Image 1 (tube, helix red, strand yellow):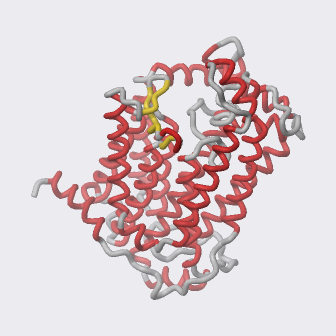
Image 2 (cartoon, helix red, strand yellow):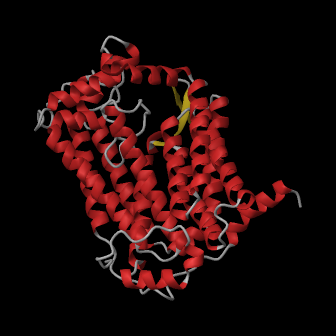
Image 3 (cartoon, one colour):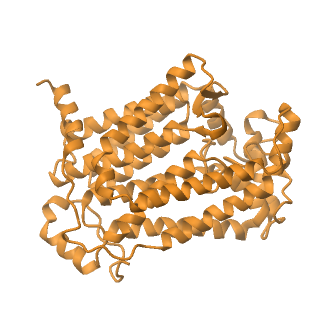
Length: 435
C-alpha cells in the first residue's frame, strides 16, 4: 500500500476503533451542575441584551434597507435559538457519549459535506446560499432561519480528532509523522480550505485551529514538534492574510493603534467599540440607553455585543461577565483533569480551546489588542448556529462530568498506565474531589 493509502487507512481506521469505556471502572455519579449555572447565566444576559437593543437594530435596518422588522423580531429569534440550544445541551447530556464518539468519523464527513454543499450552491448563485460581502457562510432555510456549516465542521473535528489522537496517544505515536501528524495536517488543511479560503471566515478558522492545538498539547506533543506546528500555522496564517485585501486592511488598522478615527472606514468599527466601552464608565448607562446600538457601531448585536455590554453595564459589568466565562472555562479544565480515558480528556480539552478562542478573540478585538476577526461572543451574541453547537459541546462535557474520578483514583490510574499517558498534564485540583 502506498504511503498516501496508509495515511487514509490510519484516519478511517479510527472510525471503528473501540473506545475505552469507563463504565466498568468509574461509577456514574452526580454531574457538575455549575456548568449549567454559568452557561444559563450567560445565555440570560445575552437574551436581556438582545431585548434591549433589538428594537434599535430593527429600526436601523428598516431605515437603511427598507425592511420591515418588528421591535421584537430579534428578541423572538434569540429566544428560539436559546430554546434550541438548551435542547441541544440536553440531547448531548443524555445521549450516551460512547454513541457520539463511535460516530465521530460520520460527524466529520457531514461537516465537510455541508461546507462543500454551501460552496457549490454559492458558486451556482442558488437562493439557499446566504451570501454577503463576497462570502457565503450560511444556508438560508427560510422561516427556519439560517445554518452555518462551519459550526457543524467544528463539532465534527472536535469529536473525530479526539478519538483519532487519543488512539495515537494510547499507542505512544502522538509524535509519529506519518501515522499522526500528517493525517491531522490533512484534516486541518481541508477544514481551513473550506472555512478560511472559500467561506472567508478567518475568525472561525482560528477557533478550529485552537481546538486541534489544544488537543495536541494535552495529548503530549513534543516541544520541538509543537514549535514546528506553531511556526507552520503562523506562516499559513500570514498567507491567508496576504491573499485577502480586507484582512490586510484590518491588520493595518490594528497597527495604527489609538490613531484610529471614526471617519476612517477601515477603523470605524473598532473606534466606535472603544467609544462604547469608554462611555459606559464604571457602572454603565443602563439597559436600553445605549447610543452606539442606534446605528453607530456595526454588528451591535453580533460581533460587537461586548462593546455594547460595556456601554450598558460599565466596567464592573464586563468584569462580572468575563468572570462567568472564566468560571465556566475552569469547570471544563476540572472535568478534563479528572477524566481517566484519554479520548474523553481530549474532548474536554477541545471544548476548552473552542470556547476560550471565541472569548479571547472577540474581547481582544473589541478593546483593540487584536485585529477584528468577526467572531461571535459565545452564548451572548445574536445568532443560532454558534450558540446551538457550543451548547451541544457543553452538554457533552456535562455528561462526561458524571465519569470523573477522585484525585486518588486518578493518581492510581495514572501510575498503572503511565506509559500510555506520557505528556498528559497533572491534576490541577489535587486537593478537591470531583462531583
